[in-house]
Amino acid sequence: MTDKCEICGTEGDDRRTLHIGCMWNMVEVSTLFTENQETKMYELVMCKGCRARLLQHVKTWIEEHGRLADSHLDDDGIFGYSKEEFEAMQKQKVEG
Ligand SMILES: [Zn+2]
Image (cartoon, rainbow, N blue to C red):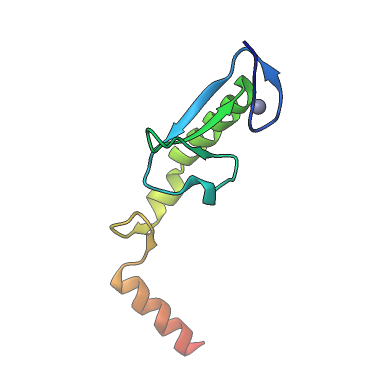
């Protein structure tokens, strides 16, 4: 049975479905995602080539050592600053 990759449009036998259930509306990321009403997970059918590219992006994201090592992240994992850094930045703004 051949299926169509919902990303690049190629047709073939080796198509698999990505399932994402992260309490986030994935349609806001891409309208290619569809929500499975039974599982409440977002799905996207993709070919081998698109899977490889996805996994490479996931690898890059997880290995963002610079962001994690050089940044002060708040409790939500979002860039933040220590109180001292924030005060120093404010001082620099005032002093020009
Ligand atoms: Zn594809």
